[in-house]
Image 1: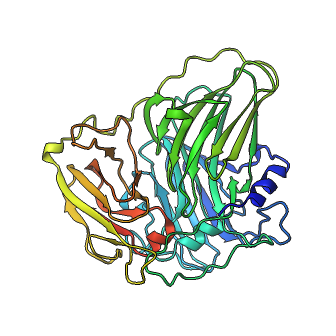
Image 2 (image 1 turned 180 degrees about the horizontal axis):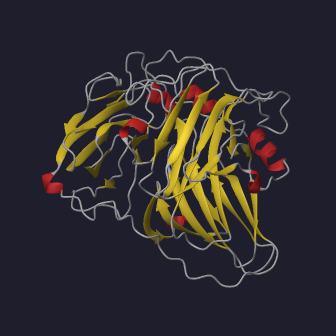
Image 3 (image 1 turned 180 degrees about the vertical axis):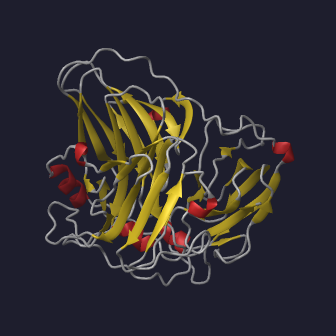
Length: 446
């Protein structure tokens, strides 16, 4: 659990400007090397010893930015001791570039490299993370995650565009990472940290922006297992995209949003007219933890246009013909409290070498009934596609697209998508320890 001591230590540190976040604007056609390597880091300012983290190019939580329509060329250089692959979480790219070790590519061995080259079809906010079934939890917990930001041709006018990667770390009292012991249980609940960070730094991070200014916040959950809610105190936030896809602009109900591992939000925040006004993005853990503090400072800005939705993604279908859908039940079982109750989907522990959940022809509408028969919330991510969350009677869907969804304990929800991307696509837990233990399946689109 995140302790009161950890909260107090986090609040006591000097606030670091977010401009220090690594932001690589990749020129069109050039190759970006991501060297995954040991990078000792003092995660807690009061730590006696550095933590043995891993990072890309020596920087935790990098944000790679490219313009929509340009080719992404990323070379993973593995300087760690474990096999790796990179998944671009939420990108509906070609299957060969999906980065699932053992399914779409061979894992990249220590000392080797692999190039990912493709043109992301959609603008949006996406995650970069390891994805080797059976071997992803430790690289994630050591810090190998970041952003891929594909910028719109005509982005909304803002004073700052800030990417915020939220993570938690299980630390010993001296600030080192707690041991990585291979779980003996067949259904690990997931590794919860005791220290929360934003962009690899102590919380709360501080943003200063002009009065009457506007911020774009891109917030992603890169925790191994921690599901939380976000709350906006003293801020008027408008959601403009969920999981990288534009949505009808709305203010969150009760100023809070669900925030499971793998989830991303794009928000526009208008600031107060007076200098010195403060607001905060809070993580609802315990009594609440401030992740980001936003303070107005400097000269007042001229007025901006009214907040408006992003342009809709024309590559997503306007409607899904549910009456023509191929349907499949996805039953999740498992219990960490029992010795012989592993995580399973439809009675089987998932493996990339196993049989697919279903095979469908390209262009087929698909409806999946996700039945969570466990006592845990189960966040799931569908690779290569976006889906709609259906209403209980399948008589419509929520007005946004997702690629990651939480299935409440002992509940069933239904999702629908058009299988328009050929290849082998995972449907898997975003709690990385559960993913490693086999809480996964895959769909083949031919």
